[in-house]
Length: 261
Image 1 (spheres, rainbow, N blue to C red):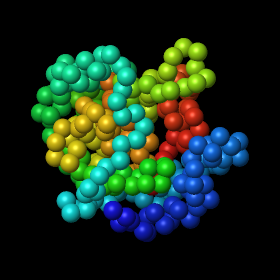
Image 2 (cartoon, one colour):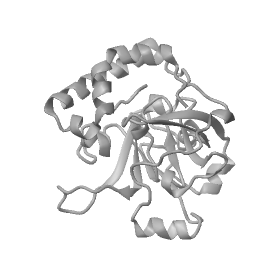
Image 3 (tube, rainbow, N blue to C red):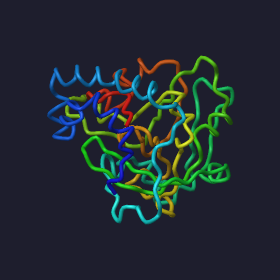
């Protein structure tokens, strides 16, 4: 469970040792600090540049064997979205689920789970690293995100993918209800060969606590970037006007946008 590509992780860890230790010690306390927020911002840039400079853009994250799969995979964040439309789909076995692909594309898509399962699939056994400090190994099967993008035809002006989701997050400061969860990645990450839209976990259909019916697996970044309960993928040239403008729910609350490992 704790097998690590020590070379790659060691290189990146030396550049981010302080913030990594702080984050694992208690992320809520750290990200509420102005100094930590500044450090997170600095590490974000360092992390992304270091990974791109040291590692090849398409280098794979370590993959494991069936024997390495964790006996229990921890489900955190949202585990049962309180959305009437979502609950209706759960009750109906997601028969009416459609993935919308919109924005800066030549052909907007509306894909059912059957459509996605009919496309070429990739299965990978990988380790999920949480910013909270735990990790688990699981087997994921899904359609490579690059194939979905090819099907839609991404316009040259598009730079990012924004994932709109079914789940909402508690936010005591909000006066207009809980904000819907969203996240974003860039096109380089989207075209990585291990970036998939997963619909199976450990050989069976993805269960609700883990993001059913469709979640992102982005194996070279921390777990909070692997968006669950995906409803729509928007291709945009900027995420500045979405949410609070930092590229995701967690990013709006102090996490770095790029979370490479």
